[in-house]
Amino acid sequence: MADDAGGPPRLQVDAAGCATVTLQRPRHRNRLHREDLLALQAQFAQAAANPAVRLLVLTATGAVFCAGFHLGELEASSAADAVSADPQLFEHTVDALEALPLPTVARLNGSVYGGATDLALACDFRVGVAGMELRMPAARLGLHYYPRGLQRYVTRLGLQAAKRLFLLAEAAPADELLRIGYLDAVVEPAALDAAVARLAQALEAGAPLALRGMKQSLNEIARGVFDAAAVEERMQRCATSDDLREGLAAFAAKRRPSFTGR
Image 1 (spheres, helix red, strand yellow):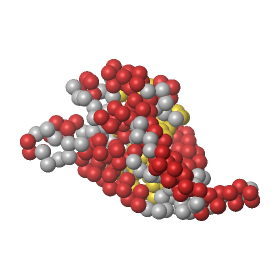
Image 2: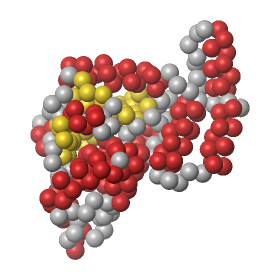
Image 3: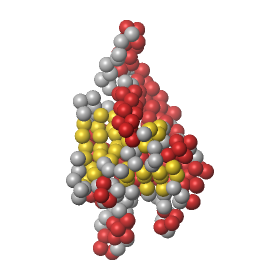
Image 4: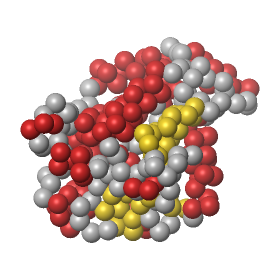
């Protein structure tokens, strides 16, 4: 558990192959500093490179999931002495999360604000708690949001939902987030771990090659960059895989398959 001062995100991998990345600045509503974004990028890459990791869960400590990027650093990034900083660091971090071949789950222990709304949206699934809210205040701050974030909102939630969240900048409660598809489930706080565990178990039961291939294909279709040849290559890789042979054998024997990702 992080102390009151907080610090960069923590990565842990359990025996089942679930990597959990935890934001650790609860005193400041888990706002994200540059060092946090760099740590997240490194942890995403580390999880993707570990053959034992089957999925990634993104969560946080405290009562709020994340308040987004630290606005004090946003202001500093426009100053002359900060030109060496990556002006698209936040966008690149969220894109790295979306691009992970692993299935990803956002365990939303509380409300999401600003850029954190897009960070969670980059995950494949989102489980939230009753009483949480989402607010995207970019318009009230004078910010035009970055392009990939706008694209994610529109392709995943629809144009009108994106307009309501971005242009009105009003807080959306959990039941509304469930209705528009931002959340896949809403549970009481005490039931959050069990709900995420059920989702994780369902993902861990799938064949890694099929899960990763279909995730990439679905995301490409959503972005309008469908490549039939690439999808066919993924299909053929699965069709000749040890995983498919194991899956068919397990089905015939009425047993649980043991996939290896090959």
